[in-house]
Image (cartoon, rainbow, N blue to C red; front, side, top):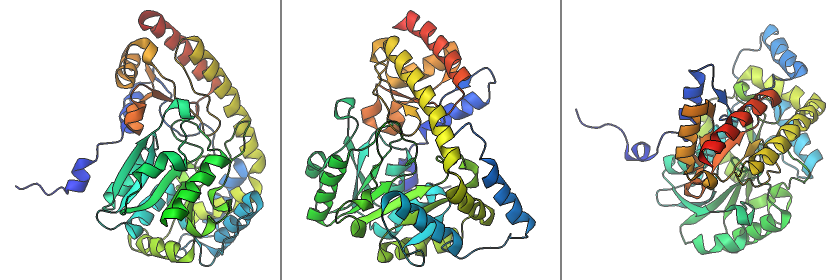
Length: 386
């Protein structure tokens, strides 16, 4: 029988995150710091809103774009936080998480050969989403010396006549970097100069420590050329609810929504009802979670540096991205060996791009107590190998 698998799919490697998650899930002795999933249960008022929706019998499809009540709540929320106004009727639609939004958008804007600039290390779905749409991801390696942040000056040499968009995530998965206003302004100027779209993944926007999140479309001249992607999974501990959103100029959002209409129909009805309450009543719960993440973050950064694993200080999301060169191993070997010898699961930095090869990603979306145990095991490991 001939090979029926498309070249696009064959060329994309499996997610480097899932391998370590699957191994950890099969062994109860393993402490997994590998998955970016909050260890908090969805806050009670949000849970109750979902239950109440089901009890009211709200089990049918919603509008393709999502309920107008949720779109209005999203519009109000973004305007309150960042001073950016979006028309809930035509400039916002609700997706099955941000991952679906990537697929919708790049399918809508990329013809074969179109290029999207993707600074790395980055979330594993960025380059894959571009490639699956038929576009070409153009990766740009960043380093801890630059704060794992790109700028217009850094990205300019990668712009070609085929470039259509720049894709950035801030706060960043996997590094925890939070882009400065200056760097985002310079990227915006580059986009304006070459008539490009900026795709801004801001799903971790409220998980911030001692700094300020800058919403890209709030910058001068950027609302009309930015697609803003956000969601509820991280800020509100709603990963399993699968709910996200896309905001942007009507002609771009309408094209992406057309893809959504054919492959999804509508986001989960129950999750949409819960998401409204998340936006209206979730602030105190978010701040509680942020305070606890910050406590874990400080512990990890201090102890990783103490054991010789140089760690850039993350200022957002819930990840550390230490350099493991002191062990004499690459990130891949370090993660494999640590899992085998000490039953601690991390993700090799190479899963997030070539520039992460000497790093590992550690998710502190795990209890403080389990992180302490994992650190004890890592100290033992480094005494043998460091």
